[in-house]
Length: 274
Image (tube, one colour):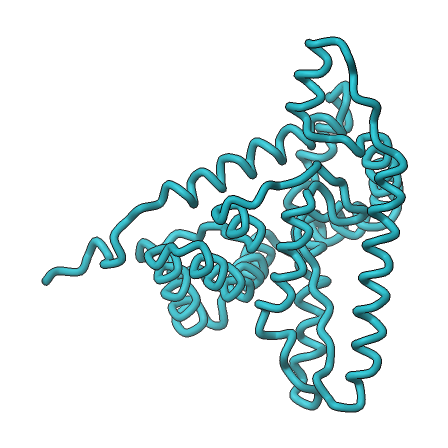
């Protein structure tokens, strides 16, 4: 089960514009269809005050559908992605996996940068830009996280978090098949993230389309490998893994959004002396 977003690159050649329009129409149709299906499978609103308070706290009006999607995802994951992730951990040395993870993080920094800018946080955006420049040059294309060594720690800012900083509500909790926990706001942010990823605008003929596919596939496997032990323990020990994942996701989202909104640091770096 992948907790990250996977982007599929599209060619910008004129002859593919008609196909792109058809894909967009298909995505819109699928989204509307899923929304209508979900609306037909909403959990009944409880009347008991205590149960009603928990219902509102969970923000999971589509729980019956979400649980079905969770069960489907975990079943498929058990026989596909999990074995691949275990083989990846077994075959690839830890130091190499760490380097590949650093590269994946570096390649996603443009999305973080534009999200920081959109949230009106110039200092965070500056740190992200510095991280990208340092790691791309001194870090050999991002394989070595030199930026963290010199004080530029990585932080996560997604377009969905930026929308939250604008006051846009999350909407009901969603469990997206094969992608994991989300919400209507985060799902919209994921679509925006595709548009913010520079690799999606690389034309054919430069070899980077193949790199983009490899980058996304590696990102999925690497992310699943990072959660191998945690997910195994969750499935083994938790009385309700679905509810545990939902709670952890919502708490993490709330904490990260709060951190973003409360980041009022001055634009000038701390080491800068006038």
